[in-house]
Image (cartoon, rainbow, N blue to C red; front, side):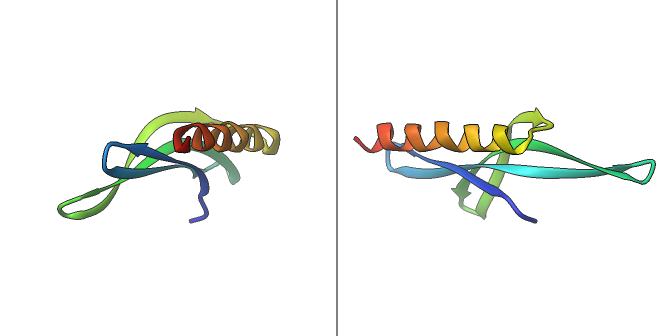
Length: 79
Protein backbone atom coordinates (compact mmCIF):
# COMPACT_ATOMS: atom_id res chain seq x y z
CA UNK A 1 0.00 0.00 0.00
CA UNK A 2 1.47 3.32 -1.04
CA UNK A 3 1.21 6.12 1.52
CA UNK A 4 2.26 9.73 1.35
CA UNK A 5 4.34 10.95 4.28
CA UNK A 6 3.02 14.20 5.71
CA UNK A 7 4.92 15.34 8.78
CA UNK A 8 7.00 14.30 11.74
CA UNK A 9 5.60 15.90 14.86
CA UNK A 10 7.71 16.18 18.00
CA UNK A 11 5.81 15.85 21.27
CA UNK A 12 7.86 15.73 24.47
CA UNK A 13 10.19 12.73 24.08
CA UNK A 14 8.09 10.86 21.51
CA UNK A 15 8.36 11.12 17.73
CA UNK A 16 5.12 10.69 15.83
CA UNK A 17 4.73 10.53 12.07
CA UNK A 18 1.64 11.56 10.17
CA UNK A 19 0.84 10.56 6.62
CA UNK A 20 -2.09 10.31 4.24
CA UNK A 21 -3.20 6.81 3.34
CA UNK A 22 -5.32 5.85 0.34
CA UNK A 23 -8.50 3.86 0.86
CA UNK A 24 -9.42 2.09 -2.38
CA UNK A 25 -13.05 1.11 -2.91
CA UNK A 26 -14.54 -0.61 -5.95
CA UNK A 27 -18.18 0.22 -6.69
CA UNK A 28 -19.97 -1.08 -9.79
CA UNK A 29 -16.63 -2.02 -11.33
CA UNK A 30 -15.15 1.46 -10.86
CA UNK A 31 -12.25 2.11 -8.52
CA UNK A 32 -12.48 5.11 -6.19
CA UNK A 33 -9.63 6.42 -4.02
CA UNK A 34 -10.40 8.18 -0.75
CA UNK A 35 -7.80 9.47 1.67
CA UNK A 36 -7.34 9.49 5.43
CA UNK A 37 -4.87 11.31 7.68
CA UNK A 38 -3.08 8.72 9.82
CA UNK A 39 -0.85 9.13 12.88
CA UNK A 40 1.79 6.50 13.58
CA UNK A 41 3.11 5.93 17.10
CA UNK A 42 4.88 3.25 19.13
CA UNK A 43 3.25 1.26 21.90
CA UNK A 44 4.53 -1.57 24.09
CA UNK A 45 3.08 -3.97 21.51
CA UNK A 46 4.86 -2.29 18.58
CA UNK A 47 3.99 0.42 16.08
CA UNK A 48 0.33 1.34 15.63
CA UNK A 49 -1.55 3.68 13.32
CA UNK A 50 -4.58 5.76 14.24
CA UNK A 51 -6.87 7.49 11.75
CA UNK A 52 -6.98 11.17 12.70
CA UNK A 53 -9.37 12.33 9.95
CA UNK A 54 -11.03 11.13 6.78
CA UNK A 55 -10.17 13.53 3.97
CA UNK A 56 -12.35 12.08 1.21
CA UNK A 57 -11.32 12.48 -2.43
CA UNK A 58 -8.19 14.57 -2.96
CA UNK A 59 -6.65 15.39 -6.32
CA UNK A 60 -2.91 15.79 -6.97
CA UNK A 61 -3.00 19.53 -6.21
CA UNK A 62 -4.66 18.80 -2.87
CA UNK A 63 -1.99 16.25 -1.94
CA UNK A 64 0.74 18.74 -2.84
CA UNK A 65 -0.99 21.38 -0.68
CA UNK A 66 -1.07 18.98 2.27
CA UNK A 67 2.62 18.24 1.77
CA UNK A 68 3.45 21.97 1.73
CA UNK A 69 1.57 22.55 4.99
CA UNK A 70 3.33 19.56 6.54
CA UNK A 71 6.74 20.81 5.46
CA UNK A 72 6.01 24.24 6.98
CA UNK A 73 4.81 22.63 10.22
CA UNK A 74 7.90 20.41 10.42
CA UNK A 75 10.22 23.41 10.02
CA UNK A 76 8.27 25.33 12.70
CA UNK A 77 8.44 22.38 15.14
CA UNK A 78 12.20 22.00 14.67
CA UNK A 79 12.97 25.64 15.50
